[in-house]
Image (cartoon, rainbow, N blue to C red):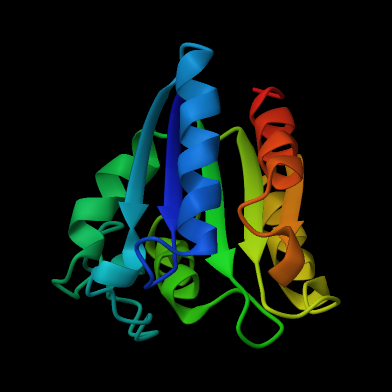
Length: 171
């Protein structure tokens, strides 16, 4: 399967990036093709709600930013994994921007499954992000493969690695 991981942490060696890399290793060892995009390093603006995409743009956004690089990858992905640090109760802005910008095409064309990886310093801060993720899965009518969370004392541990590997094994 063609898997796209949107990694939203601005910390290249942070906990969320580690989870994304562990998922990638597990999926690749099972024969899948995996691409990680560090969306925190991309310039992706929020949706302008200008409706250009639905009127004159024929599904293309009027904005010319790094989302133009991401659209082809998202449209070819069969599995989309969101890897998000949780700073304040919901998916981080770095993940929000590319997800919101899918408005112009409604949903990625080939995505059939999604998964969510999250890390946070605090426990019990994941409900908002999980609710949003489930809403995206429902709206896009894709399979929710599951969620792995890692609070501060669970980050970069073998137990968390095993949870990530188990999630990847659902492919």
